[in-house]
Image 1 (cartoon, rainbow, N blue to C red):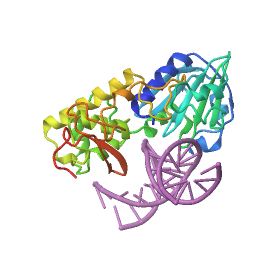
Image 2 (image 1 turned 90 degrees about the vertical axis):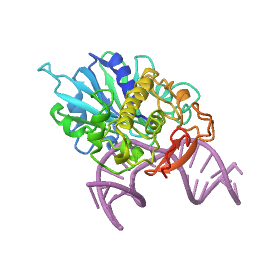
Image 3 (image 1 turned 120 degrees about the horizontal axis):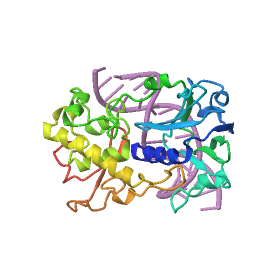
Image 4 (image 1 turned 30 degrees about the horizontal axis):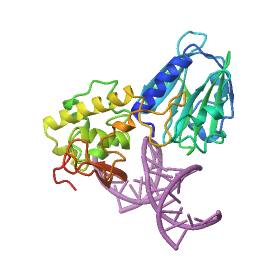
Length: 297
DNA sequence: ACATATTCCTGGGGGC
DNA sequence: TGCCCCCAGGAATATG
């Protein structure tokens, strides 16, 4: 599922493909896709505007759309949630095939274009396609000054300065389990279920450990693990377990370096102990009982 | 103020 | 083979 590294990979792919391109037409727009607060009608708000930039914060992604003033006059804000894909389809390719992606995983059941919920046709050829099997993804147009109120307030580990002290201040004495803390977008923005488990394993911290029980070195280890794991994942184009594809239909390559997520029953790469699976904060949670020991439930 | 449950949605897998 | 049920989860919302 797209978390920070996957969204950042999509952002980079789109930046390379869309800068300077002008939206010519909007097609196949499904009403359920729209954020209720989106400026409408969407087509009127985006047509004729050039893409001036592609931004990201946490798991949110946006296209900066220009206008007569030369400045960014609108943003097209996107959240992919569980199975959303933003796909750039160059001139000459057709979008149902591009949505299917390549490779062995997730390449079935989406080849017919059933799950395409919006298409932005670009002047001079090519499309931007929003594809989403589970329809959780959202998209909307907003004035750029509205962006700050829509984005998550948490620290983005790859955009904001982050160390142990900053993280501890953000946690603000909360007693909640570390896993639940990492999933909160108003504390750390961009971490989802996979990277929460990976980061905690890297930091040698138990997912159930209460946040208010961490020592200063443990906060430091957590901050370091957040920056390290997320940037390593970005460098490999993110993780594809099932559905994720970048904006050119390519799967991520970080999956084979996962330490714990999806590896229950297999040996911990660090100590050989079988990886355990449990349920925490309502989520499947994977950990090494030895590396991340400490007696927490 | 915190924690847990529910909702949205579909495809895939297990069980019978 | 074909049902039925459950599971996966990001984030908003509701309830305890």
